[in-house]
Image 1 (cartoon, rainbow, N blue to C red):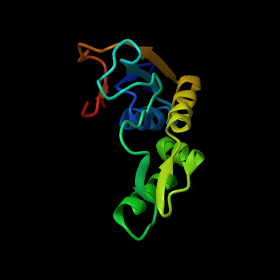
Image 2 (image 1 turned 180 degrees about the horizontal axis):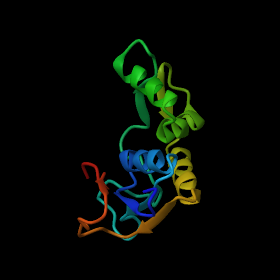
Image 3 (image 1 turned 90 degrees about the vertical axis):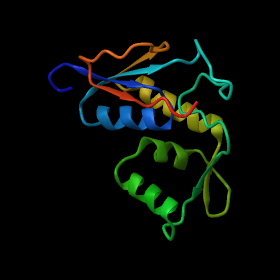
Image 4 (image 1 turned 90 degrees about the horizontal axis):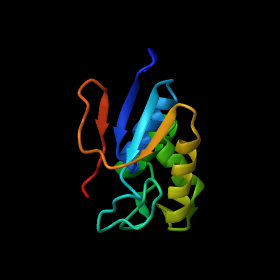
Length: 140
């Protein structure tokens, strides 16, 4: 935080990457913990952050529906995940689909190079209750 403390974010999936980015861009130090490459879930194969394990589509990008409207709101709020998606977009009609590797590489590069983000490649097995912590480990 601004008083010299950091917020720990556990998990560098989509939610963890976005949380780390939003904190850092507001001047808050972040310790971003990611278990890969030391440990992988059955669905993961890449060491990169924000790995998309199913479809490469982030659904509709049309502001005429809820999914597209949410993406537009995220763009306006400076979302790193949406910026990475836009930078790695592939043709998919009205959907926002991405090149998976490029998307993950963008997230990884931006966060590992940010001066307020420290990354830790280790599985977290205990939460320090004295440290503000966001658990963003996802469903896997």
